[in-house]
Length: 397
Image 1 (cartoon, rainbow, N blue to C red):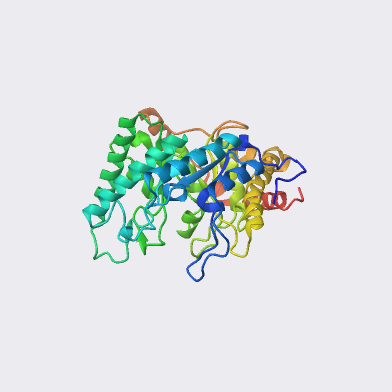
Image 2: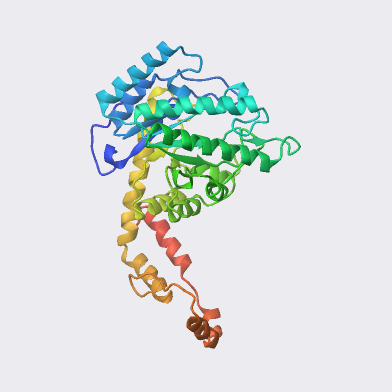
């Protein structure tokens, strides 16, 4: 597939900050029950094709670009060729990460392995990947602990394991500072798979953990749609918590059907309403970060289908963004929301009153009389509001 000849309001452009990983569009279609169905796409070709489609950048694990057994000269050649493709297209590398899950050495985890040699090797590998990320211009470094967990709680004390995890992140923050890199860490949660239970399984767990670190200002979150939904949670709520805390450093967009394995479906393909509210949240907050698609094409696809997948991911986001604008301008929807704001005490267009403690305010509240029969009878018109939202999404408003 080549970039569409017809340009419209949903045509991706670099200013939209869409990014993909070398491992996402480069996914060869391997799954636990079958071998690859398409060849690996060389990194330089990925860069050129994403640029044609209007993406902003490309992200990578260390081994996506440099095989783990590459010699120093081979490593330099691969990086040089990749940089040449970036320079030729203008694509950037906003984020980098490390593969700490594929090597058999990490069968018991990386930073939380019971073997101290493995923990040290994981630090060595991550430092080298941080160097590579900094060389390519990355300013965000994602940490996904894919093997940081257990199948049996008899194996390790979670408190000890979290202590090892904390020590590793403290060490890596100091390493980044010592090298003068302009880089922040973004932690990515997942409840299970490939381990039976993964430590720090949700965005909320990760957020609490961050404040136990020596440099919490350097560490934020990288929530992923599928990972939160695997835990049965509403993704936009986790993202909202990260935004409210100032800790949304990166985000992974994809799709997931509840109760399934980690599917990494095309963004918005399985739950358009959930995707709509996520886009509404990000755009309403004017979040300046990357819209990264951590997903891959169906196993049924050839390379043309891979580029259809990439183009469709970006296009769906832009369509939903346009629907958000319609939502914000719809008179009936805004009337209902205005009535809710009025009921909240803030008045039309103003935030609701906040409760701040004072002795006087406490006395006023204790003396206040509430019309409970009226409160108990009132409805909130959420059915109407949700139906209007659905009609808007379905294109009849």
